[in-house]
Image 1 (cartoon, helix red, strand yellow):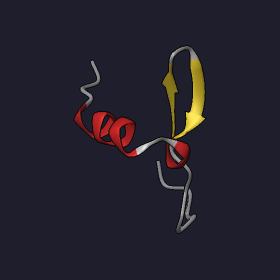
Image 2 (spheres, one colour):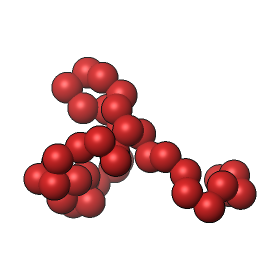
Image 3 (cartoon, rainbow, N blue to C red):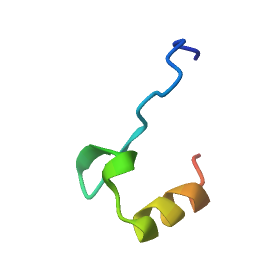
Image 4 (cartoon, rainbow, N blue to C red):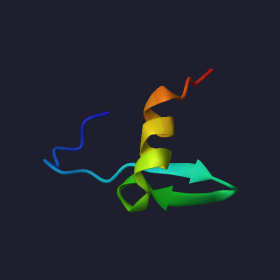
Length: 38
């Protein structure tokens, strides 16, 4: 979907909690990019 916001927040579930991706450490961000959704 397209919201029109030039800088949207991305949230993902990690260890049972939804957290903004921008607050993750570099290692977790790298893992997020490699994830495959089914």
